Image (cartoon, rainbow, N blue to C red; front, side, top):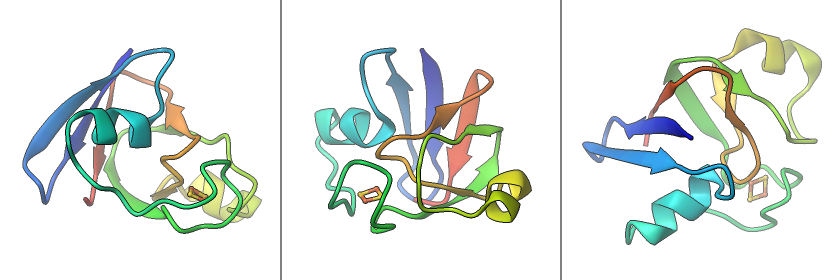
Length: 87
Ligand code: FES
């Protein structure tokens, strides 16, 4: 599991191995912007403030992935223990 801090909401979530970031948000009663849930459409595109994303999407180009500043939280995860998102 890893931790996700939603900076604007002031909420910290634990994302279990069998959960997505979006799934953990919904389980906590939040209503994230989401559509395809497959990392394709870009609806859930979010700015990463801290931490290293583990990109699993088909939306960002390689340069964007390398920058580490954007994430598609419907599929992507965290390489470390904690991500801080601009949500
Ligand atoms: Fe479509 Fe995340 S909901 S990319």
